[in-house]
Image (tube, rainbow, N blue to C red; front, side, top):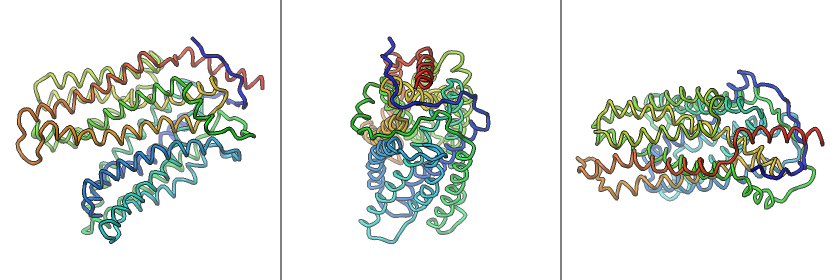
Length: 462
C-alpha cells in the first residue's frame, strides 16, 4: 500500500536525459579515487602499525575498532552538514566536496603512514589521531560522492548503471592497491620510506580520478536551497519513516559482516585446510576479477527482474555456494570453482545497495517532503561502518573458541571449525540479510516509478 503523498516544501528541478557512457564511467572513476586511499588503511595499515610504527597488534586492532565507530558518527554529522547548507554554488551541492576534499584526504592518507619517533604511548596516540583524522577527511569526500548518484538521475536503468560502474571502480581500486603497493615498498631498504612513496603514489592517482569524476559529472536533480533551517532532530526523526532505508541498513549490517568474516578467515583456511597459502594471490585475483565481471551484469539483470530480485538472487547463489563448499570434501579445485561462482553472484548484492539507497532518497522526499541526500546516504554508511567495526572482533573470538593455535598442525575439530567460519558463518549472516529484504523491503519498481512521476508533478505544480 502506497504511503500518503506529502506536498513538497522545496521544488525539485529534474533534467530528464539519459546519462552518457562518459558520465557513468567518470562516476565509477570517483570510487577508484576513494579506494586508492581508503584501501591503504584496510590492506596495509595494521601491518604498518606493527612492523614499522612499532605498536602491538592489540593496539592496532583497537585503533581500527574505535576509529570505525568514530567514522560511523562522522558520516552522519557530515551528511547533516551537507544537507543543511544554503549557499550552494553553480558547481552543485555535492561535487564541490569531491573537488576541495580530495587533496586533504590524500594528505591524511600519507600522514597515516608516517612513523614518528615517539614513546610507545605517543605512537598509540598518533595512530588514533591520524586514522580518525583520515576517517573524517574520507567522510567529507565519500558521503557527497555517494549522494551524488541520486542527483545525477532518477532513471532506474541509469541508476543501475551507476551502481555497476561504482562497483567496478571499487574492485579496480582494490586490484591496483593489492598489486602495486608492496612491490614499491620492497624497492626501498627503509620500509618507512617505501610506504611513504607507495602511499603517496596511490594518493596522487586517487586525486586524479576524483578530479575526472568532478569534471565529467553533473547534478541533474536540483532543488532550490532551503531558506529556513530545519532542525536536525526533525530530519533524523523522518528517517525512521523511511522503511526502504531502514531495511537496506539492516541487510547491509549482516551482509558486510559476512564479507568481512570471509576475508579475515580465508587465509587460515588456505594455509591449514588446503595447505596452500600461496593460493591467496590466485583467490584474490579470481574474487576481484569475477566481482568486476558480475558488476557488469547488474543493469541487464535489473532491467529483466528488478533491483530487489537481482539483489536477492546474488545473496541466494552466494549462500548456496557457501553451503556446498562446507558439505563437499575439502578440495582445492572444488573450492576455487564454487567460491568463484559465489563471488560472481555476490557482486549483484554488493553493487545494488548503492542504487537502492539513491531510490530511498527519492522515497524519503516523496514520503516526508524533505530531500536530504546527505543524511539518508550517511545513515546507510553509518551501518556499514558499524558492521566493519563489529565484524573485526568476531574472527578473533571465534578462532579462540575452535581451539586455533598458530603455526602448528591443527586438530580435526579446529579444521572443521575453520571450514565453518569461512562458509557457514557468512552463509548464516547472508540468510538473515536475505530474509530481511524478502519480507520487509517495500520499494518495488512499480512504486518507484509512481514516486518519480509524483515528484515531477509536484515540481511542476510548485
